[in-house]
Image (cartoon, rainbow, N blue to C red; front, side, top):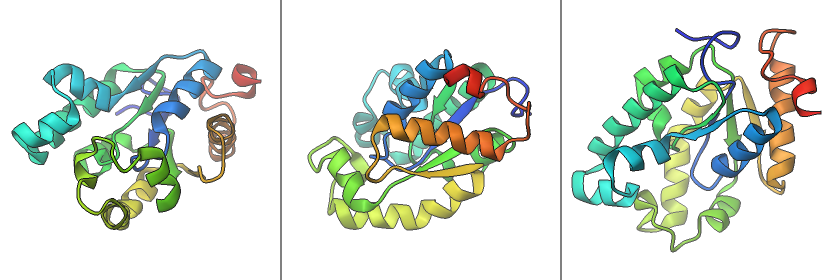
Length: 189
C-alpha cells in the first residue's frame, strides 16, 4: 500500500465530470514540477476507443473494468498529479487503493458542471436529460468522493488557477508537517 510520504501520486483529484479535474490537474503538475496523468486518457489509449465508443460497443461494465485497471496501474506507477474519471470511486477496490493518499474532491454545482461539460458533449452517462442524470449521479457518488478525500475544494465561481491554489492550501492544511515534500510552499510559491 502506498502512502502520502512514500511512492504513489503526490495529489489525486476526484470529482464529477465537468468539475475541471484535467485542467486543474495540469496546472497543479506544472506548479509542483511533477508529471500529470489522467486515468480516462489511459483507458482511451489502452482500448484504442473513446470512452463513448467503449460504452456503446462494450458497455459500462467493460469500461469500469478498464478504469479499475487504469487506476491500479496509475497509483502504483505515477508519482505526480493524478486525475481519476468521475465514476472511478464507485469501485470498492479503487476506494481501498486511495486510502492514505492525498486525495482532493473537487466539488461543483449542477449549473456550473453542465456549463463546463456542455449539453452536446460526448458524455455517455448524460445522454438523456443531462441535468437530472447529473444530479442522480452526484447523489450516488458524493458520499464516495467524500469518503476517499482528505480535502474538499469547491470549484464554483473559481478560475482553474484559483482552484489549483485552493487544492495546494487544502492539502497543506490536511497533512502533518513534512509528510509529503512534493506538496510544499517551496514547490509552488
